[in-house]
Image 1 (cartoon, helix red, strand yellow):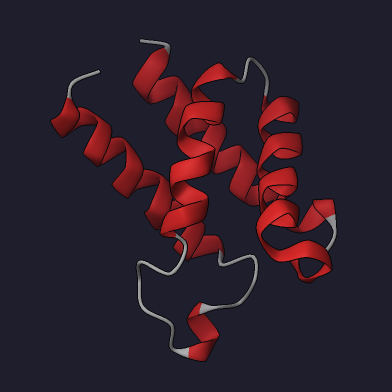
Image 2: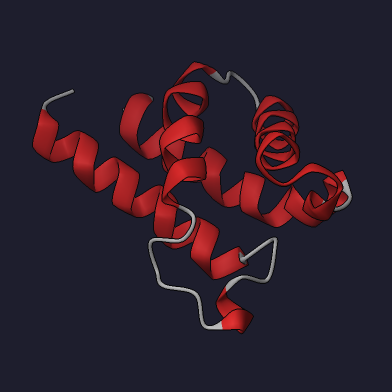
Length: 94
């Protein structure tokens, strides 16, 4: 994947995370790049996921890694995982 496409891939992941805002950082007027560290750690792992359930597990574990118990329950990440799965398929399963 060339750098331009990878940057777009990261931007798309960031937009989905911001949209779902699992930690409610956007409610605290945080900048749009607040989830960039999580985005950068999720991107390579998302590429390797082979099922929507794997994406769900991975994204929840990533947020637990970054936010400990503030990450909340795994179910909080279900809709985000579904959107990330669709995104992954668009980039890598075409």
